[in-house]
Image (cartoon, rainbow, N blue to C red; front, top):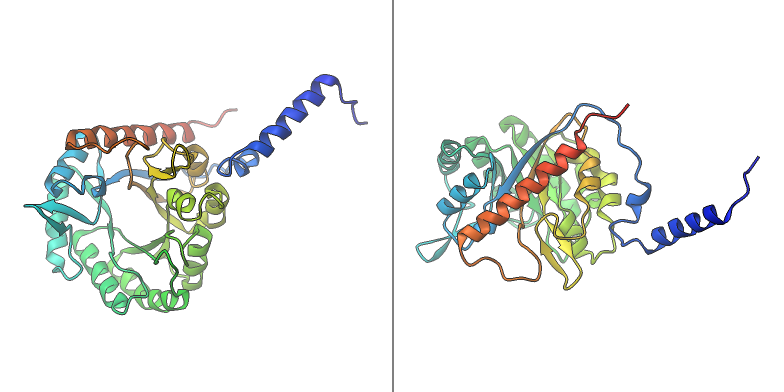
Length: 319
């Protein structure tokens, strides 16, 4: 028998309905997010890219990240060296260069987890560059190479064909090629997963970037719903956030509209090793630090924030 609705339950129901209807795009699906099965905890590796230090030398970037308490690092694209912008590892650099940089990082207590490919998969020389990037990564024992498509669109058919050719090279060198969201054919995690599932190889997987999903798709796709559609393919994250007020702007984790508790909960008990590499650590709507010490402070804040999120998700189950 259905119990009658009292004035109190009517008000409560109305308030709940109003909250759901008015929830922002990033929160709407989270209201009804199911509890995730608790298998073996995911081994999250909290890293930061050197990218936030791009206006400073690579040496200063590595020193800053170590001083900010990181044990893992992702190499990000270029740094200022002697007044010139220099790639961390050039596309055509000998593989020994990557081995030397990895040793340098490890000597400082930083384990490399990922490097950029620096090329779109459909580029004319895309296969050759990606192949060489995989060999560089293997020489440095860097487990992942990151790639993504053009924001104006690409050619998924070409990606799939090239990824299938690259897959045995990935396997033989124990490196995973991961593709992340970047608009166009890679606008969502679901779109990236359609590509990797077609390739169907354990070394061709997805990197998830919730900030890019919000940014490039202007908030029209909820990262929680999107990640839920591709979580089984995800092997790493580029961590950044995004705000639409007071202006539309990428920012560091915890400064924006991404709920990292609910987001990472979707992959918190996979039993896999998944790196979380902060790509943007900056506060929205204020000038970026002019001195590296300011970047150090933001890098430390990003690490501490992610550590607290993981601690909460991996707490012992109640009951």
